[in-house]
Image (cartoon, rainbow, N blue to C red; front, side):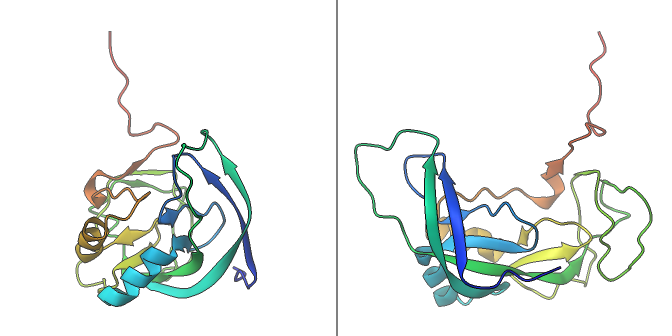
Length: 179
């Protein structure tokens, strides 16, 4: 996969009243965009798993809702890369639908048709606070990171326990309602 090199120019789309501390990046790869407030707090707390913290130039802003009467300043944003491979998904204890067998045991990048909760292999996690486990394609955070989000009241971040995290675009885990 190619690396996104500077300058990092983005178009942001806001759905709420104000910009958030975390911006979902709709691109390919282990990337995130975070506010300067997030970046400063992350570094000060000594958390691990995010790398780079390179400035982002906001080229355009699109709002889904009308701006509130309170005017706000757009925060500075940073582009970060999420650690990859610091943990493995426990395939036997997770409910994951795969399109076929792994062709590479390291990256386990064969895709996922859906999952209904997952568990990490015991002893495979290196302790990173933010990471993408091999074979899953989602970002996972530590309990320490969850406390960090709460402590700093960071916005636009939704955390779900791994055992309750569901992604089921083909509705294969859903049970039909019998009438």
